[in-house]
Image 1 (spheres, rainbow, N blue to C red):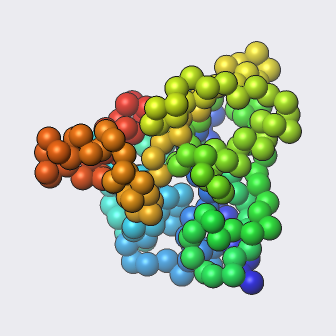
Image 2: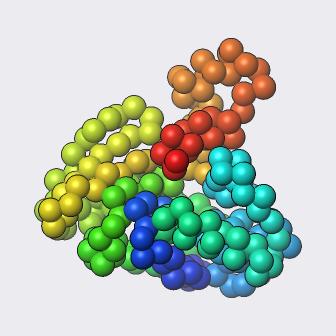
Length: 218
């Protein structure tokens, strides 16, 4: 059984108003066996799409290399844009060494509610994936239930939007389509994607995410 531990502490600027929440980076990040084009930071996998999407939205001209400069570029952007990152899974066990959320067992979660209490400027949580089993929203719902917080539906259209009250603050959650390529199949069955693809054969799953992310990150 492989113990998959999160290699990064939460990165939350003091002025952060948005919080990116996923699950875990691929196992190679936990055992420091990064690829040349990986970046040793949250969502740094060469196969992940979060940073390429943000790069496109904000014209960041990011480097995609295993260097300190590439890490600093991302940290400086997050500080400047008042965005934090804290994945919800601290560790899990796996029979197969892969990045599948469904393959996680004996899962230990970070306490995001406590973290929100400590970071009072956060207004929006951006889940990197929806409420499918072992996704970030799925796990966060357990926090909400334990604390008897009401998780109110605002919109059930993709991306789904909810909100809850925490100590006289209203915090909104947006369940964005996962930046993992594993989500491409679900995007392909999405009615809006099909409509846009029909109108433009060059429209891609990356473009679909780009449209969605731009609305909620900017």
